[in-house]
Length: 102
Image (cartoon, rainbow, N blue to C red; front, side, top):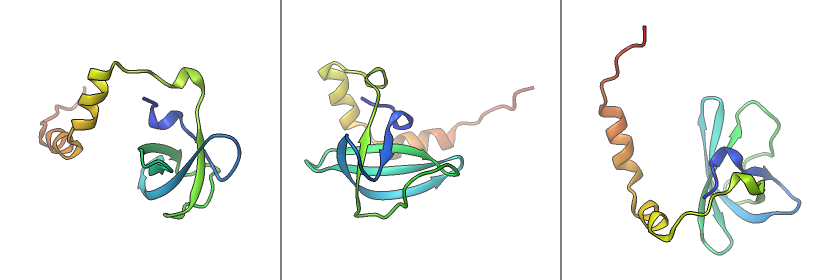
């Protein structure tokens, strides 16, 4: 597993080739939906106001990361992540009644 903010995203160079599926503005960052050439889906974040390549869905880019930014998960944890429903998580988060911090 690689944290989305730990990915280095670029137009060229050494790394893993990916195709940009979609990009969504999310405040201080832009969330990238990426797919490797073998079909593995990934999520990445790039700063919304920093230097970055032009984002064009369907275009090929390269991602890389530092070794300390990756974590190897036991197979049981990886299977649970694949089965997780992100919509359910979003619905749960929006239903929480949070109290203001004084």
